[in-house]
Amino acid sequence: MKRFLIAAAGLFLAVCVFAQNKGFVSVPLSTDSFSNRHITRFEKANYQGMDCWKNYVVSLQHTGIATVWKYDGKDGLEKLGRFELATHDEVNHSNVCSFGVEKFDKSDPMPVIYVSQCHKKPYQGRKDVLFVERIKPGFQGSELVQTIHFDDVDELFGYALQWVVDRQNKVLYGFGNTTKDKDVEGNRHRIIKFRLPRISEGDVVFGKDDVIETYVVEDYGLRYATIGQGLCIWKGRLMMPTGLGTPEYPSYLFVWDLKNRKPVEVLDMSLGTTGELEDLAHFKCKRFLVQGQDGLFEMKYRR
View 1 (cartoon, helix red, strand yellow):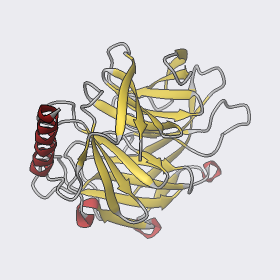
View 2 (spheres, rainbow, N blue to C red; view 1 turned 60 degrees about the horizontal axis):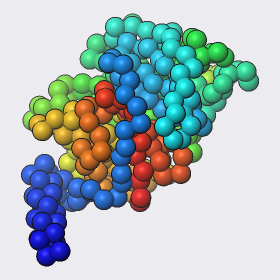
View 3 (cartoon, one colour; view 1 turned 180 degrees about the vertical axis):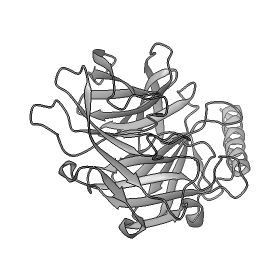
View 4 (cartoon, rainbow, N blue to C red; view 1 turned 180 degrees about the horizontal axis):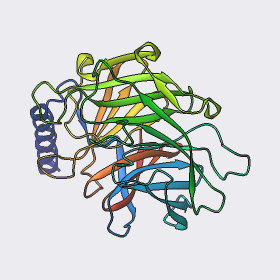
């Protein structure tokens, strides 16, 4: 027992030192507020954004390939359909998938999805455009019903801008770095907030006068990792998976309090997951699904 306590203390110290070396000084690296388990391994592909609505899971791949699954909450995944999005393109990275609050048509099986283009190259002359797509009944195709674009004349963002819907408050958040590359000295990470347009408004271009709030997380006590992946908003918290699942770029999940602009904690996602993680979605209660290149994981969060 004594040896166990000494070993545990040593592990705790190592985690603390590791966290400080990575710069998360104000936020302890958590290893006990969550648990992960591997649900299934997908066929090898370039997976990116993912979100849940009820028991439906929409999984996206680079260029805009969508797979719709039905998840029983245990181990069963039923494949309902696979198709190319209406915005399928080499520069549609489909980095984040986020369900909205409206259905385009009453017959639709789910609300529209918001797909972050999030590519270093522009799509039809616009960079970091947000696609709003309707998944058609039968899960065999989609239709583009709206685009949303931020006219970033002040160059608040650099390499890529990710988008996520706050369904509870019906607002839209963007997140991204401030420089042209992740490792450039002085690179920081900005949050920006807009209203969530209704589908009936058609294509929307936001300007600087439409910004509700914007700030960088480093100004509020968090040194963010260099490689951002997906986004999820749950109970006023922005949850941000990061890294590549490698020793150089390990996988962490940053939990951020949007109302109070402060870090909650950083989870060491190397516990119970493997490979590069890509996106996170709230499933039910305190359960989340995590999509990565090694498949789908389930996370139980205890906070």
